[in-house]
Figure 1 (cartoon, rainbow, N blue to C red):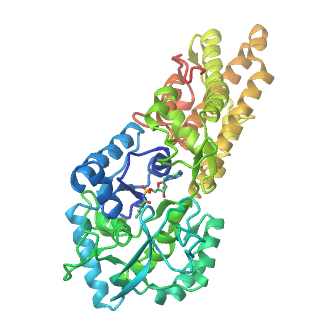
Figure 2 (figure 1 turned 180 degrees about the vertical axis):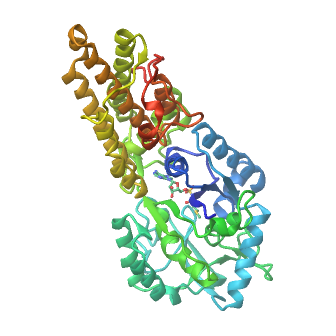
Length: 508
Ligand code: MSP
């Protein structure tokens, strides 16, 4: 059976992971959890990109071999994903034999089909971005220095002039444009897709896909002088890992359902990668989604500024769930935004401690105080049944999740939480408790059921929190929370022992 196949970029191992890497990977995990809990078999692939000049040099600076360096940093990524509760199904490293073999196989196949040919390359190379630029793309400045055209980089470029193999990208322009048009979901979100369309309409040039002087790479088959260009190598991870997966067959995985990438590598994924797949005769992924970039306290994260935020420091202070929540709530997936500890603290206190945490506390307290901790059955649930009204929002929530509109989904959930807070105030069960206990039972039953639904929605984002809420509210399907549908459908909605627990989010 076909699995819902989600990928993250494979990360460079020239430095330890930071919040930018955490962002993409947590988003992929949220999407995976969402689909998995609804019964879809899911497969999440992540990994590390370990070849290329940049890594070769970083290893040298540290006085170790590239492989030793790769082993050490790649492990740091795996460690962080475990820490952040990311459940991936496979972790691919481009230095693994299963991957290197595939790269060579593809190279040879495309040489045979004429999609790869040997030529002479002259151009400019950005080491930091591992990207080739032409003379016109990177004009010389008054000091005769050519800089990387990527506004976030602007580093001086190196002149590269050497024999090289080329991929015949130019011949795929029409097929790519046809594909974008026939498959509107392929380029997402729309505003980023527009940039790709404009770029491809301008015309495509063949691209150099090998390097003569870089030693740390996959050797070009039959040519001892050359290694495969790190991007051509890296993109193939999505099929090499699927073709040699320990847990699934290639047919169960390919084509990928969603490649999630940052906006700065969108061209590689939305232009070069589909052209490579076309050349190979493989079906294209359903969606290539480019999300935006975080700045930190208004500044670009960079080595020179030394402003990389360490995800471990953040989770030590705020907890893992709050970090996951903030990443996906604060900025719409697809836009850029700013990460600051102040805004994290603000959201933590307002959204998590106050809106959600207090609501749960109040409800559980009242069930304790007025009903001795036992929620009785709700008779006559057809009439003004609040949980059913809450559950009507499931369709809109699902729609957001399917479009990867994570902040939209969370905005909707917090809208419901705020309605529930207003409902408590308007109904004032503490007043009714003096005169009408039947009314108190109904109000509390409805609030408990509604909160159980809310916990189901929160679950992909904050799995621990969802489980803690549902266990305080007397329902829990170990090890995962119940979905809104399960709460409504299940007999468990009718009663239950309510157990007060410690505050979900103590104020900071
Ligand atoms: N190795 C390539 C990707 C190859 S995929 C076939 C690469 N690696 S990277 O280590 O530089 O990771 C880039 C990715 O990390 C971005 O595309 C994005 O997913 C994530 N981010 C890194 N910094 C980021 C921000 N400041 N903000 C948001 N995401 C960022 O490129």
